[in-house]
Image (cartoon, rainbow, N blue to C red; front, top):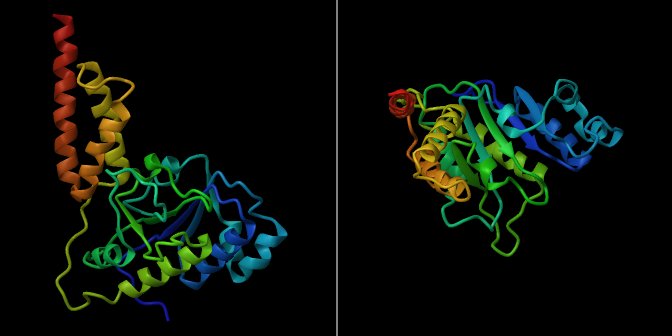
Length: 249
């Protein structure tokens, strides 16, 4: 039985999947858990192959209506909250992720979340560090340290089950109103910040990405609100206005 959810328009996003059996299995899982939409970024296999269709079964409609994007940034452009699954062990020391249980408990503390996306990476190497920074939160599924990597469709099944189960948590508590800055708002803000800091000489081109990513990681971990990110962007716009007008004088 599907529980009443505190989120809507759930999108499962696969980045560069290369196994048709996995894609078919994920489509079937989307049907099992009443996901709203399956999105795929630059598939590396034929997602409409006979193999895929055989695995999809009742999830065939998700393949038929699947939206394909050329990069992850475009795939999440309309999403209010983006979660990224990460099974990698070669992350940088600045990377931060939570357990799937903690992440879904956090989600269940809100009254309503619109346009929720969950992103899963490549079967062989997961998501890149830059792709992980497009998510509001990054989580992992605790597994054996000797063999931490899960099959893609298995990971999706665990995540959808835990997310579905989390819907009944905090049912008798006063829930918070969701007002976090979207990953797009944060991404766009840091494009502007990086450009400004390069212009004033604080950042150098060959090290700017690494430094800006540390700052971005901090903003993501702080659960920055829409109001807070708008204040930050307002400061950047005012500095840019001053710099542009100073050049004219």
